[in-house]
Image 1 (tube, rainbow, N blue to C red):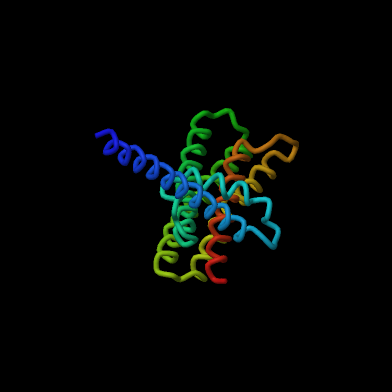
Image 2: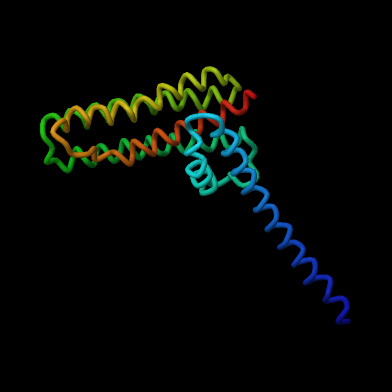
Length: 186
């Protein structure tokens, strides 16, 4: 009788080991895809950001490069949506100079425009139009740099942009997504 109980725990342990190894393999896949996508250029410093961003996203475990590209693009969409909300909150808070209000307005406009283009990029990726995707994402990434440039001009006397981290994450996510899609072409 005791012998019939042994296979159940052994099977359970085997299932746990297999599930754990699948997670390790998936994690290595994210790391490998990020390493490949960010290697050989000016963006090798983005590999840790790529891994951390994608591993935190639901569905990334076990996703192939195309799946990770879709996840990175969706993270970009979520990031840009959050950026618009942050900008609106900063505008409501007030206390800005006229130049800073102008910079916030520029940021809001550019991020909203970029949101429309991200939707186009999602569609381009879904139907395999990778050149269109790359062109769309180049436009998307420019929104964050335009925002930083607007604050650079508004804060000519010094001071940093209140959106520096938001803009930096936006550029990094857009770049990671684009690099992963470029790696699909190879």
